[in-house]
Length: 581
Image (cartoon, rainbow, N blue to C red; front, side):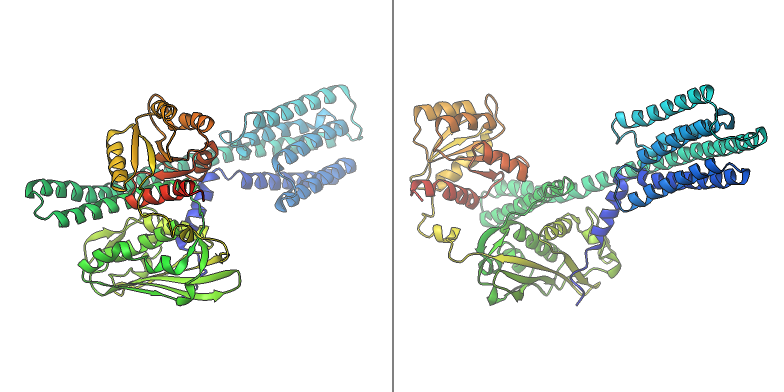
């Protein structure tokens, strides 16, 4: 068994790639290089001053070198934030003191020219605020002006002869010119490297977009073709194979919805907004039903579905059931896609139980085509496909497994792949769940006496799209709800003014005349006791959900929805109000 503590290779690669992406100019490294170059030049000048017999100048430059060294060490230990301003200020201060000490005749003011060249090297003008480079430039120009003024109006404090001054002047000219040339050349080299990286990243972005469109175009067009083709067959055959056609439509629509959800979740990953929301439930009951959506498809392929759940897991825990199901759906979908004979197996075994938590090892195993060891890292990368020579095609989109890796990371876990070509695959991961207080009532306990339909529930449906209105209205009718329809927020408020006897409001967010965002503010002021569920196809992240709840919505139901989801949302919100729970 491999160590399950190993992070998937794709995570490491993505981290290093993101680090390079956000720091391709490598400014911190350049700052250290400037500090070391300044330190080296200072040490050289200190030794040369000492050789010329200028003891005070040698001591002053040595103190400067010590100060630069301290700044480098402090920055290394993260004791100071801005190394650039520290070094530039120290250099400017040293040059002003040297002018007071030696006068203008040694031409130490020439060092301001290489110092000025360092500003564009050390500052990323696109990332920095405008005032930062202006501060550095003004500091250098002001110090240069002070040096010229003091050199012209003050007598040197250190006594030295014309020969010493001449030798020191020559050395200062030479070092200043060399440093200016080096820094200017470095700036050109750095900018060329920067431009090359930008072009390379632009190419990578275009390739990624092309790969994304190609992959997802195929993944979406395949079930869409099945839906359109089946509808045409249903129209031509006049219902002769009605059940078979409807099963095909359900499968294709579910597959298409899964792909859309993967795209939206991938968008959340890129925006770093994927989140976990644990709820209290019975883990054993959840896991025993984990393979139900795939039962029919697995049997149609002649495969066996094995569910092996440890009896010790029959306890209440806090778990994000939607995300855990999503992980298993992606893993089981992959297993089903690449397994032609044998079995698909789901295991969950208890590793450790404590008074407050339970640690579980999960495994999804199949007897499919397997994955070559040198391709293991590819299956975890976004939109990366593994080429199968035996079938002469690329397999897998990579999106599902990328999302699994990120979800598991949010659960303080990671995934391990055990697979060889032609020998099937095993995906393993460990998760620790916090135990729930068994004395507290659970949602299932509260719903024991709740009706299985919506008989007697008065619903105000607010939806501007005719098709969505038809689907929702028919679904609610089948659930025996009493329905009133409005096509925008303004109509909904008028309906409430005429009759406020509604148990719940289902309201779309994006509508003409008055949106749901505006309508909820008026409804909560006028009818605060009527619960309102946001009914939307928008991409809802945790921040948006928080904003919706704060504005007055009781819950959020995403479109497209299944009848059971609509029933569950209304039962959770409206039924307790009816029963005064």
